[in-house]
Length: 391
Ligand code: RFL
Ligand code: PHB
Image 1 (tube, rainbow, N blue to C red):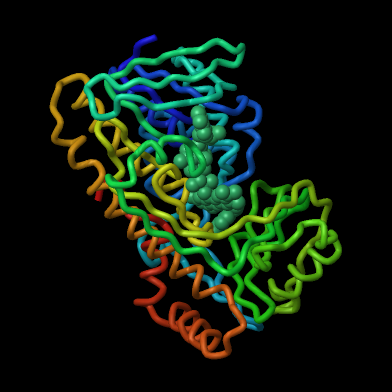
Image 2: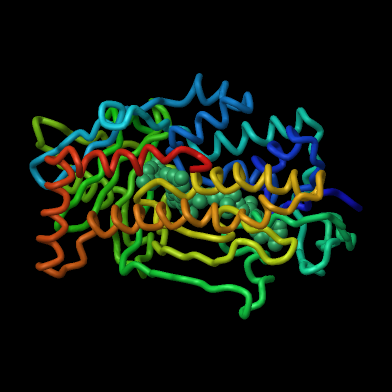
């Protein structure tokens, strides 16, 4: 098989890239290890930045999002006894949208189906070859057990944090940075109406808690827990009691509504970055190149921002033979990646107590400054609502 761009991974980065390339007249084939049902059911991100929503609108991918998603003006930040609203619209003129990654994944899948995109699910043994030549290729085994070879002008590694693309770059040709945080999140999905109109990020001496949501009838909530936590040690009752305490039951008569928990998992927290995001004819995008802790809601949005830069670069390279944008891709993408890496680290370290009394006082001092100073609140709003794409 031959195509112009071989895309490894049918997550948001891979599917959106194939969509952007097609609108620029570039052919691609997407390969994916998991089944389509698995990819579309994976519960992950929930917040889309302003620029992500604008991009989806501009590609006519925003109808369902506009109909079923929910626009939020800002977030609540709190410490015990005090809840403060940070209004992004007032501060920086931009909002965010609550829209599950599962929903976005389905929208992208349907749009690619309508365009006749070739996507192979259920592949295995994906390997990348000849990356430093003008004709790289990917080999893999298809779902029905046949050996396949996909020749291309370029390969887009959109295969997330455990895919083979990142590892295909020789150690001598890249640098990595990593921060592993000494805590994890216990995340639940519950069939209960959210107890808040906008997300609540709560600092609490027992640990951070977050009240997010997916729809008017489904809530998504998180608790800071030790990294080695066994999910079985957290009964539903224990989870709701901890959430209720940490999220501030009693603040101005507020209460948390409990309901049936439909999903429960523990998520490790780390920052990771591999640069450059290019090796020869291999271009990395999304989680394949960088991971951020979820506190700033940046992972999915960064994946979108990467492919918004990568698509025109690949179009110029493979259709017009002009390498300038491709040569500048990594540096341009990394500016935003580092900004989001810093913001995610900043939000994370402000909100997760580690038991050190000095650090806790610094966290509270910073939180109070963000809530009381226009400069502090604007900084958070600007980063959370998202910087313009291609800035
Ligand atoms: P994905 O979504 O991981 O997709 C990569 C795809 O590559 C496939 N793959 C392979 N395909 C072929 N051959 C191979 N050998 C392959 N190996 C792997 C995988 O099966 C997969 O389908 O990466 P992508 O596209 O870069 O998208 C990144 C986002 O998924 C990720 O950053 C976000 O989910 C992060 N994230 C959040 N981001 C936000 O912007 N806002 C949020 O509120 C937010 N919350 C979250 C999150 C991530 C979470 N988890 C579990 C990681 C909350 C959670 C809990
Ligand atoms: C989510 O809804 O899953 C979510 C929202 C905001 C975050 C992280 C996760 O910062």
